[in-house]
Length: 163
Image 1 (spheres, rainbow, N blue to C red):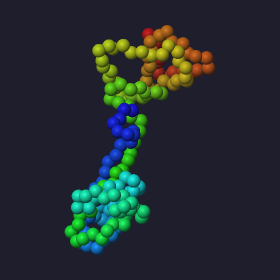
Image 2: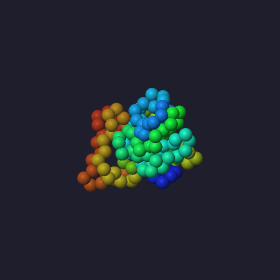
Image 3: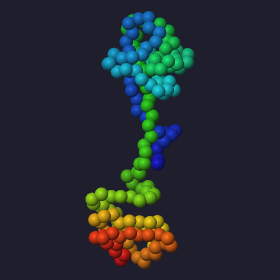
Image 4: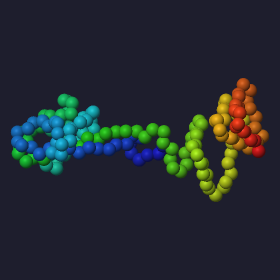
């Protein structure tokens, strides 16, 4: 799948804001908005103090779960902002235009196909066992060959038409 950036992962972030009472050297728990600081990896954390970006392992550490520690003592009214990036991957996505499905694709109700060339193709050889779903019909453009050892099952009340 095409993407912009260094990897196929996507991210969102959570912002936590803490206003210091004075003297704190670590922060954790609920921020000014009642959100509880949580992160799974310190690698995905950015910390600013009064708008200045702090340096990980120099100005602070994340050695304790869900805690920003190792800070120089904060002064009353200092604002510490923590941004936690959370990563996720998009699974089984096909672009809105182009792309290829592999394997069987099922469509419920109605399938509408459009384009400048209303030509639809199907393979000439059935290489895998196939069962036409109950209460449905199937159609193929022929001639069609069923490979050796392969079974196409057409149930009672279903129809497979080869045109």
